[in-house]
Amino acid sequence: MSEIENVLTAEHNEAIISLLFQLADDDFLYAYRGSEWLGLAPHIEEDVASSSISQDSMGHAAMYYKLLEDLGVGKADDLAHKRPANERRNSVLTERVNGEGYYMETPNYDWAYQVVRSYFYTQAKKVKVDSLVQSSYRPVAEAAVKVKMELYYHRLHWETWFKQLLSSTDVAKQKMNEAIAHVMNDFGDVFSLGNQKQAIEKYKLIDSEEKLKENWIASIKPVFVALQMDVPTIPANPTNNGRNGEHTVDLDEALQTLSEVYKLDPVASW
Image 1 (cartoon, rainbow, N blue to C red):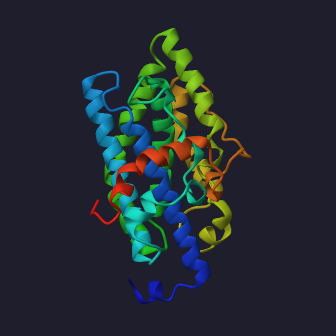
Image 2: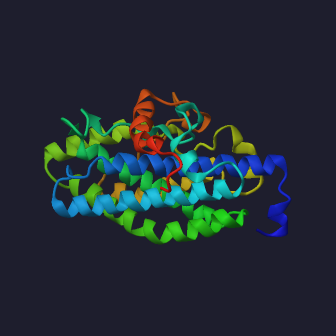
């Protein structure tokens, strides 16, 4: 760490910790929901591709949790597995189930929803990472450079699926439009910085909420124009703001599954 980073004020330190939890928890839950498609994707090539994306995303979460560990917040594995739902700072979108049923029994998952959620989330993640590489906090900027290299392929993958399904059959288009509406209902907190908004923006850790939203809309607009569709509107007032610990029962159930093995032997190296 530089001398400046060693003399962080309490306010500055809290802002960094808050942002890191948002980034880490987002990728942690997104990777988990993606992993539930293992063996259930439309074909074997997609099974491999989407599993690889989930693995990469979990790796990104691990990097952010390690930065929190370096700040003295706690052991990275504990931060990932032992915190209760009300302490999580992920967006509600990332915790939502893939559909009805349970992946180990009788899953009835919605591939259209997976495609839309993944495309919109990955595009939002790209907007954030593009900003984070210029972050005033050097460790997160350096981590963002590493994430950005893999994220290019993630975004391209999901954009391809998005365009193909919306250029396909009437049934596919209907399911995709329903999925877009479903995803956007939970999109209101994706760019929220939560209760630490003022401090996060003050210390230039990432662009403002407003700028991030503008960049996301600009990034997806060409695709929607080509498909002759209106760009969706981001809800102004989300029912639940995950950045402030406001979550759904889906998160409780996800955390129970995610942490089951870890809690069997917390001292093991994961």
